Amino acid sequence: MIPSVLPTYARAKLNFVKGEGSWLIEEGGDRYLDLGAGIAVNALGHANPDLIGALTAQAHKLWHVSNLYEIPGQKVLADKLVEASFADTVFFTNSGTEAAELAIKMSRKYHYDRGDTDRVEIITFSGCFHGRSTGAIAASGAEKMVKGFGPLMPGFVHLDFGDHDALRAAVTEKTAAILIEPVQGEGGIRPVPDQCLKGLRDLCDETGTLLIFDEVQCGVGRTGKFFAHEWAGVTPDICMSAKGIGGGFPLGAVLATEDAASGMVVGTHGSTYGGNPLAMAVGIKMVDVVTGNGFLDDVNRKAGLLRQKLEGLTDAHPDIFDSVRGVGLMLGLKCKVAPADLVAAGYDAHVITVPAADNVVRLLPPLNITDEDIAEGVARLDAAAMALEAKA
Ligand SMILES: *Cc1c(COP(=O)(O)O)cnc(C)c1O
Image 1 (cartoon, rainbow, N blue to C red):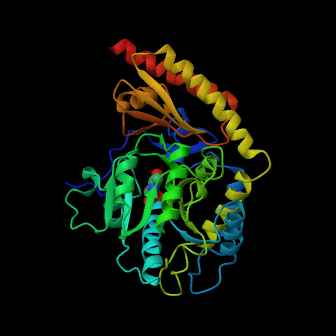
Image 2: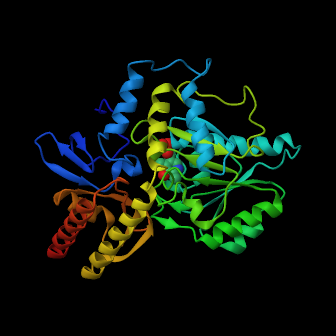
Image 3: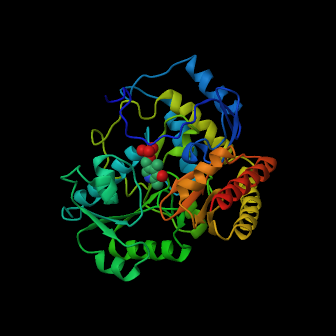
């Protein structure tokens, strides 16, 4: 008999009932150090007092009115995001997938309004992940996501990650946009080299193609800059955000330049929940904290500490680990064992990590994790690696 919850997830048998900072607590009181943060979502950890304060204050005032009316928090948060980034304007969604949908629509409409009605193709890269809507799975093209769900939305061109010649050849008079994660998350923590992001920007400028960055996982302080693309010194035309921006409350956003957004006039897009007062209250607090004095400096310092300890861990267990990669607190352990085995051994050692493609286990801790918890987390990963060695 089918379970009452549609069984689309392979869940671990862990039953958390409470969170405190970087810790998750099971019914019986067992404590797990959370280096996954709900897949880069709980950027300020669990039960953060600032976020609880912002959410509950708003909850006592007003939950929802719809976008038929003014929602003052939207302007407050949009102003902050515009101030903190390349963008001139922002649309609020409830998830990363919805941000992908709008980014796709926005880029096509941009060219349509210029009379370039054939410029509909969007170029994406192997290993990418942009969500699970029909548009977002078509964008990925990965067999495991699209199989059985056709016909897929047409207009996506899939290229191999890092194949520069193929990329140049693929940009034609039909290309609307290039869509890329500056650091691939699900694909296995694969940073795009700064030089390549610069090259993409140049190629887009030469050809009038829009450049879309998917920063749903790598954005909002995760890599030690507000947006990961800042490391390369390039800006996109459109940028997707979600995950960390809500800190655990469902929130996403599409940021864009005035030019790129010019086609999205009244009536072209909408969302019932998008930008609702509760989400805005949390998002405002989140952005205030992440852009606040010294916060990102501290993320970078902690990232250095974690990375150094992980280099030691991988050196100590050459049969388990290949290498460490990633940026800031978005790190990957490239494994020589099955990532699922390391994640499971981690559960036994009471440390939470997240598997990814390309034989990688992801570490995406809360951005405000303490130095002690970093040391404890690596000690528990060490115990997990030893347990796997003992089994081999
Ligand atoms: C998680 C993710 C998405 C999808 O976000 P949802 O909130 O799950 O819809 C899109 N792009 C990237 C890079 C992601 O990591």
